[in-house]
Length: 400
Ligand SMILES: Cc1cc2nc3c(=O)[nH]c(=O)nc-3n(C[C@H](O)[C@H](O)[C@H](O)COP(=O)(O)OP(=O)(O)OC[C@H]3O[C@@H](n4cnc5c(N)ncnc54)[C@H](O)[C@@H]3O)c2cc1C
Image (cartoon, rainbow, N blue to C red; front, side):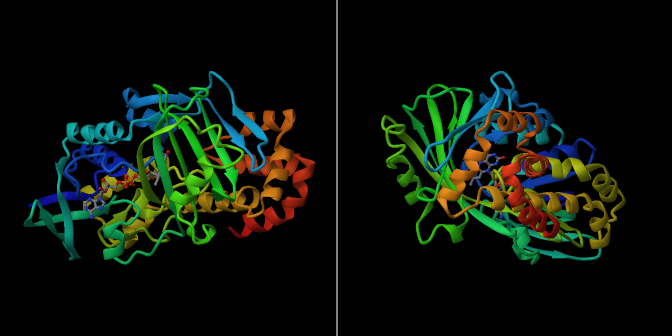
């Protein structure tokens, strides 16, 4: 069997790429190891408006969010956002992923469920992929093999393409019985339950919420992310907040942040989580994966049609990824400077600096969760208290 492109993984990024390719007349097959699209679910479900507009799956939105209430370790609360101005959407991930993959199939892409590659080798004419499909072994040939197979990508490992710079661990519970503003999410900081990063409470409509946290393994100091979650809901400062909540489900998963240096080889490439595209500031990977596709799709389609898919061809096509990697590195540097701070008192002092009307105005006017670097730079330039961090930031940003 012959396809121009075989995509390993029918998640949102694989599905989106398949839609773009198939709608340009390129024969495309998606391989999905699970029996169902969108399961298992490991996501807070935040999809920013630009990414949502690309797929127009507004019927999968459970709740739109206008802002975030950010809590410091000692309880200083910063409201960032404005009622009536949507910052992000919360989706049902199962319906969202299914919607994206259905669009690919409507465009003409094929989908094999319960199917995964067990071997692949590159020849001068194409890639020979050995696929296990519901227990049967099938040999496929394609011009290009794309790994959109998530954080632990088989494709990335099989072709020895390196590792994302950071691999965070996320934990989340779906809960009912919490109250709060429907269109605002909450972020909690403090080393007892979210060392280095933050925990979240995200409204999902109908009095339900997602409560979770994420961390780098090195910051956990031997604890599990599940223990950190337990510490949040029983923390002296917050236990009243979580007292009436009932858990519906728990899940845990990896968040790869740090695009690999060469996400391509002859006739092979990886995208989305497989390439380490998630944002180091929020862990969001859907928007970055969609942006990655948007940046290369026209040139990639031409290359597939002309069968010009050597490593050096793909390197030219993937040139925009260099800028994404740089942006990720700079965002990580600012995150480490302002948020990933082991000392709660120091983090509190940052909240105190932020907690002034003129700074909150600045955050609300310049702040864009998609592009945190311009806001970080503006704060370092304009806020006197931040100036002592500016030299450190300068080094971090120059060398990031
Ligand atoms: C707790 C948590 C919360 C998160 N919250 C958010 C959020 O709010 N917003 C956001 O944008 N991102 C969030 N993320 C990250 C987000 O889930 C990912 O960035 C996103 O799913 C990446 O999409 P993808 O298509 O690249 O990979 P995936 O969604 O992982 O899809 C990969 C697909 O490939 C399949 N697959 C894997 N291996 C194989 C194989 N060998 N053969 C065949 N199929 C295979 C998988 O079954 C899956 O369907 C969160 C992650 C975690 C862990």
